[in-house]
Structures are given as structure tokens and as C-alpha cells.
Length: 373
Image (tube, rainbow, N blue to C red; front, top):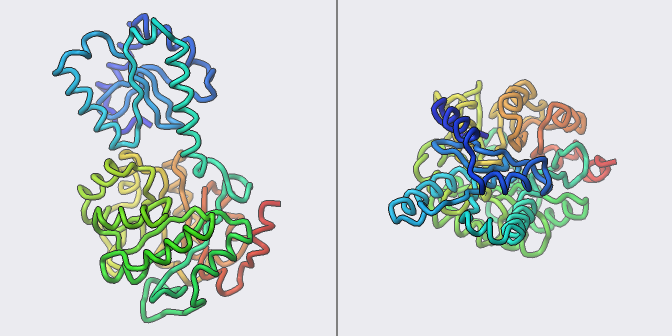
């Protein structure tokens, strides 16, 4: 929650806490103790800065400005500061001291409105569609030539076609009271550009499923196509490894909350290029880097497990969750039974992507529907 703030920033925060302004004291009287329904911290370190007030739950900062902030150079610095914080997924509300002194109730109303909006945006992260322990069931639909398929370990030569119409499959998931869907454009992944956006458009337009879409997202245009076609989230993987600058720009431009980061892993190292290439990037460093840039949801696939239904990589997931307890972590790969789902819930996973186990009838939709009871 400190976004890599160093010791000097922490010392500066402590110094500022010991000499707060009258405006800060006034607003703190209303923010402290969770009076507005969320917890704020005062003089909170974040990256290179100290925020006057910060709510980590909503990634919401509040800044109070004295007269010095009317100076043009200070204004420019404020804009740069806000740009950096936005890149980390933090939204800033800014008020002049005089606004607070003249009409504190008006300021509080604006803060309460923003809290309500932020809670609505983050609801999908903090509540489970199935109502059990915060775990979200996320079925997967992989698409080749407009059909619902599954690959084993990402091998296009090991393809099984399960259904000709992905929309019909999505509707079955919706009828089972599942609310999320992981949609993968395998044609796009192979071509390096989004291909099956019409399937996404049909599912997003004809169901109420919260859809994340990945495969072939390599450019800003691809991101726009995916979001404009109805995806709630764009799922990215290799681009975050191979072109950090581009992905970081997308996080800032579209908002970090619009992305889910996919991490393919082999022996705790990141794998790319359809799992054919293993990098020397440690999974924990990879996650930390992008969490600090504002990414809120990450799913991790152990490439040795995917499509083989041999059970999930519980030890790996335990390690990730212990290092990043606030992360909305989604398990992926290897799930073969409802017992696996139970185990993932017990270790603290927030979601689980299930594919082949559903299509091979190892886990029925009725079981998933009853999982909440």
C-alpha cells in the first residue's frame, strides 16, 4: 500500500503528521475512525509522495491545497504528481483550504459521493458471485474459429472442440448463477492481434456475465476494441513481460482497474510465447512490480498443470498469497474436482478459473451452483 516509498518518504510523512494544518485537522475530525464507512490514513506515504489522506481499500487520496498551489509552477508539479499517482491506480480528490472552511458539508458530500462511486467500481473484487468465502468461480471459454475449444498445455495441436457456439455455453454458465467469465481468443494469441471480438460482443450483449477477455492484445487499439466490445477487463500477459513501457502506458490511459494480469509460471519463473520460453523473471518480482503500478487482479497458471486436471499448484499459490495478502489472486490450471475448489478457497484465493474440468464433466454446473450453500 506504500507503492515502494523509501525511508525518506516515511520520515517526511512522520514530520508532516507532527505539524498538521488547521484545514487538515478539521477534515480529519470527519474522516478518522471510519466515520464515512471506510478507513482513511493521514499523511500516508505513496511512491515518491505523502498524501494528506488516503483510503487503501478504494485507492482514494484527498489533498488539501493552501494558497501556494495557485502558483503556476506548483500547479504543474501537482499535475505531474497526480499523473504518477493515477499510474498507480490512485484517484485524487483535491480541495482548497478555503472550500473546507467556508462549507465543510459540501466538501464532505463530494467525498461521500466519490466513496460511493469507488465502492461500486470495486464491488466485483470484494464480493463473491457465489457468496462463499469471497471465492469467485470463473469458467473459461477458449475460442478458435469462433468455436469453444480447450488446449492441453497451450499446444494448438492438442485441441478439443467442445461446442460450436460459445454464446450458448456462456448462457449455461449464467443459468448456473455464475457471474464471471474468462474468455480467451486463441486465434488472436497466435496472430498477435484480437480476432474473435464479435464473440465477445455477442456474449457481453446477450448475457450479464462480467467478462475478462485476453489473447492477441498487443496494441492500444486492441485494448480499445476489447473494452468497446463489452469486456469489463482486458487480460494481458506477454506484453507485460516484453514491453513494460507499453503496458504501463495502458494502465495510465485506461485505468489499472480495467486490466487483469495473467502470469504463466514454470518453476516460479515467468513463461511466455505460448509457454515455449521461460524467462529469468521471478514470479514474485513480476507481481510486485505491477501491483505497485495499480494492478488489482492477477491470475497465475502453472504451465505444467494447465489442461491436465492433476490438481492446482497449491504451494505456489500459498506463497503468492502470503506475500501479497491484499491482491485479488485468481488460481488457474489443474483444477479437476470440487475438492480442488474447496482447497483453493481455504488457502485464500479470491477466484478460480475452471475450464477442462467443466467440459469433461468432472465438475458439474449444478455442483458449482450449489457451492454457495
